[in-house]
Image (cartoon, rainbow, N blue to C red):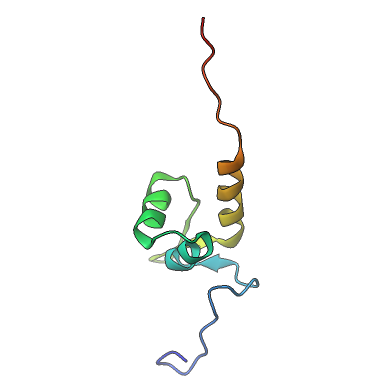
Length: 77
């Protein structure tokens, strides 16, 4: 429970629509610092809600999908 009496949702709760950067990092099994770097670079989509930064839950899957895409290589002329 949090200090205001409300129960905190576990980070692996599939019903969450927006995740904290830390929750997104846990889902991706990466460090918090790397996750903040991905958010800052725009590689991992995020939104602002008031003064808070949140990662849409579906953005985590989209990021993983982007990692699985074949990299475009330059063809020799």
